[in-house]
Length: 165
Image (cartoon, rainbow, N blue to C red; front, side, top):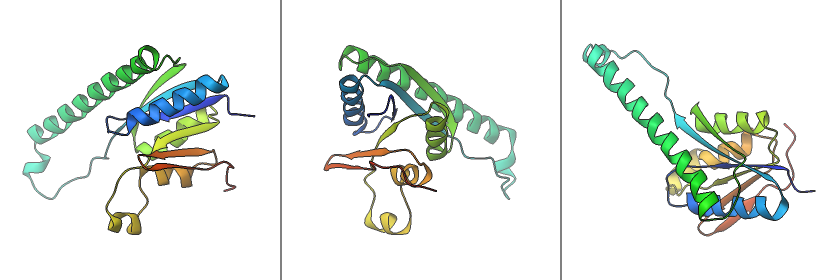
C-alpha cells in the first residue's frame, strides 16, 4: 500500500521544481495527501570575543537578516503551493513553515504528520564534502525511519523500506 501522506521539502534551488513535480505526480496518482515544508535555517547565537560583534547594531542587523529570511521563506512556500495547484494541477493539503536545523525539522515534521514518504533532492557538493560529511538529504535519510525519496538531475535513489534505529 502506498503512503497516504507525502512530505516534500521546498527551497529555491534549481532542482526544487523537479522534486515538487515528482511529489505532485506521486500524490495525484496514489490519492495521497501532499504536504510542503520549508525550513529557515537558524543558527544559535554565540557570544563573540570581539566587542563590535556584541554591539546592538550587529544584533539588529542579525535580527533584520533573520526576519528577511522568514519573509522570503513564507513567500517561497506560498509560491510553491500556487505552482502545484495552478501549473501542476495538484492539490496541496497543507504547507508547513519551520525554523531551525533543516534536516531535524523535516524529520520532526514527518513524524508529527505521520508522513509515509519524504521527498527531497540531493545537493550537488564537491567530492571532498561528500567524503567528510553527509549533506542535507543524506542527513534526512539517516535520521528518520520513514521512506525517503532523494531526487537529483541525474536520476533518483530511494529507501523503499524503513530502517530500524
